[in-house]
Image (cartoon, rainbow, N blue to C red; front, side, top):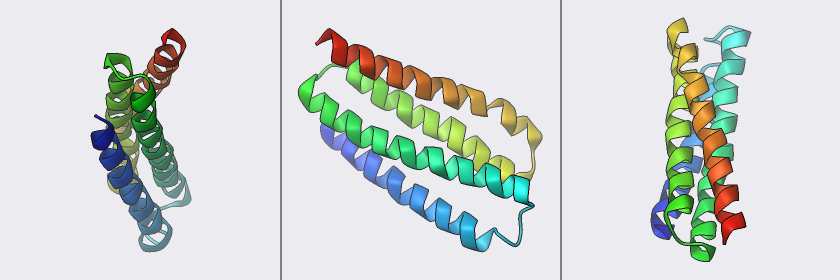
Length: 122
């Protein structure tokens, strides 16, 4: 599980940097400022939770088991739903995608709560 979360964290960080660069350079002239900000928010939270996956890999070495693994998977799901919906909203203008974003936020919150619980119960 440690290798899995390190690999996912590293790949997610790679994608977050690529998305940030894409948003800052390729999209600057194509998106209105509010959609640029939406895209940048997606990239920022993407990177935060790529780092959270690396932290989860470390935590798994200290407190192996289901709760730490669950936290990592919640961070993955949160990234897909939160950042993914924001990227797509900014690129397509489809406003209904904004309804998906809070589900990703809930996954992030749950991931942090489960990670804290795993540390405290050990």
